Image (tube, rainbow, N blue to C red):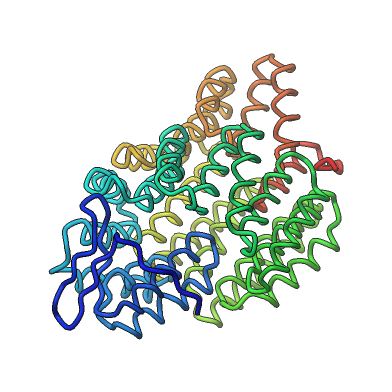
Length: 485
């Protein structure tokens, strides 16, 4: 395995004697083995650049070199699904008792993230940015945290700090490029991602990221070529083939898109990844007007995930099915599916962070079905639960978005289009579903021009997720839409 020379921001413990090589402004990395530290750094770099399979293998190798390597356990657990990941995170915390303060906080932050303790997670990285202001990776992680919270200005500031501290911090340039994309700042995004490509010309993810920017700009053939190049650079980078499939779906090439998904599944190493690609297939089938086929795909995914003991996917299937049925206007079926999802979530006992996310998503989907089917008392009760959760977790922009979406849906169901516009206008611009509903609310409120402008914008957004394809087909009244060239 290729390794890196050790920077000064490391404390290596050799035969019980600590050699202090760290500057106060950086976080220590403590291990009995210099080789384990070098392996850890290489693996962390791979994880930062979405080379998950290789990053996981690297973290496992670092632990094999030093079975007491607390930070390696924490990073391994952060990208390992299910109980196995939680066990690794807890092992890292157990081993961290005698480590320097900042290193202990970083390890605890990973566990908090895994358990879905969002306030503690973000607070930890903010504290680390003060304890270790010269550590570029801390600012990178904090920027990622703000990005997840949709605090784009704060994310850009932290990520810019990371690149200032380390002009070779490739992953920070990647995340900064995505922040600019989400802010609809295409030119800065492309310029930043070009730096990412220049820093890692032999890695796949820079080409994948550039492809997504090209896709967003409507350059679908260029995007497909860049996604393909990412896969050609590393045949383990299966996710690039999912990008290829999306560019084809956006051009209404359903056969070609499914062929790319087949190839992606053949290239993926983990069962969870192979199963996850079926969600993309189901959404594409629904977008192509084949909802029955989409339901059959979900049925097959249900059975295969259970057979593989992949409980995260097994619990996710009815959650995703609920949203698909909501979008298709089959509200009673959606409510029944949500009930199945809640039962399954209780039975599978997933780790905290995953369970919270799926439970919240299921609650939102059920509330949407209740509101749109006229069950306003039930919808209001469900919304009240979501509102309480959002109040208790003020950092979660997704929950705040769910609250506004719910208020908008209930207002629409009550015939108050103006109130719906007010609520839905507060939703995240990147939430395709919310923007679709906002366009309907504007039209019902008498603003047809504003509704048409919003629909046109959403139809040319070219999101990479599967649901975008379906919502796009609904917004265009089932007519074929080209995602441009």
